[in-house]
Image (cartoon, rainbow, N blue to C red):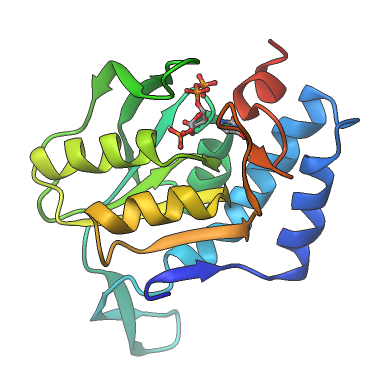
Length: 207
Ligand code: PRP
Ligand code: URA
């Protein structure tokens, strides 16, 4: 599928397997999730535009490169927070916005409870972060809102994606780049990803 990247790097797959393991406790889960987020950042940012600049080394002047656009990270609360520090390690100069979304357990519809974004998104590269892409309701609500706020270049980084969630994002946002470490089999009857890793927020925060 166009603009869908599955990151098969051995370190990513190794960490993902440990995250899936039901025995992994919150402290280790948090560490692994940040680590895998940092690794995924290399792939997710590969196409960022750079402009040529010049730099004076202690020896002589040479050409260099500078990112063309400002970068804004937007984790979807809560679970997206689990990937934020890892990505910030790679892009410390990024600005950060927050979107709080909660799925209704019965209808699975996502509802906003927090919207806090930096200004002037139009010329920024926005990285939307959420470890789980299940029905896709949360991601689509977040992307729609980011677009309303003027964001033109948005990419989604989701650790585990269900085919249903990918299809939902694709229906509304045909070319939006999606980066994931795994496309899992399916959703269960109550909207959880199989095999998945369970409830990412609960596993992160021990709730
Ligand atoms: C989880 C997860 C995603 C969302 C994915 O969040 O972190 O944000 O579900 O599901 P969807 O694709 O069907 O919308 P949840 O609403 O459980 O909130 P939490 O992160 O606070 O636990
Ligand atoms: N949210 C999660 O945290 N896990 C799932 O499997 C689906 C939605």
